[in-house]
Length: 218
Image (cartoon, rainbow, N blue to C red):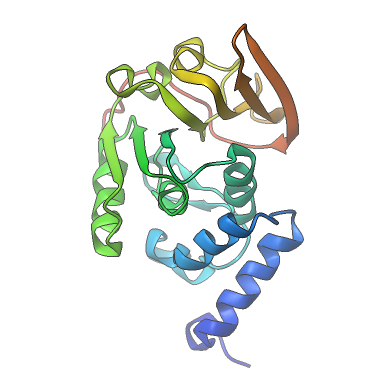
C-alpha cells in the first residue's frame, strides 16, 4: 500500500474532486478552479501529507485552512462572474483566494496577520496568480478605497453580517459570511444587496474562527 507521498498525482486529484463533489459542490466552474489549484501548495510542515483530505488544517497565527468542500461550497454560493471584483476578508493560507482567482477578474484579499499575507503572496507569485492583491488590514472594515465590490467573501465568523462590508456591496452584489455568536453555533449566510435593503438566505451550519478587529501583533 502506498502512502500519500507515493500516490499517483492524477489519482489523488480525482479522489480529491470526488470528495468535494460528494459534499455538494456541483458548479462546473468552481470544480474546474479547484482542479487547477493545488491545495498542497498552501499547506506547510507536518500537515502537508494531509493536504488532499477534506478536512480543515492548522496554519500559522492560530488560523486554519478550510476544508476543500467548504471552500467549494462558499465559492459556489458566491456565484462569481468572470468580470467580477471580489473582496475576501481573511486571507489565511491564500487557498480560497487562489480558487476565486480562476473565477473572477480581480481579487482583493485582506488579513489582520501580516505573516499570513506575506506567505500567501509568495505562493500566489509562485503559482503565477497575477489578479490577486493581498493586504494586511482590519478586514472588519472592508476595503473602502476599492469599493464597491461585486462579491464579498468572509472566512471568519461575525455575530451579524458586518455593516461596513454590506455597505461596500454593489446593488445586486452577493456576500457570503459565517454568522454566529459562538464557535459551536454558526451558519453560512448568503446576503444579496437589493435596491432597497438586503435579502438573507441561510445555507448550512459551519465552523470558523471569529472575525477579530484590529491588526495582529505578529
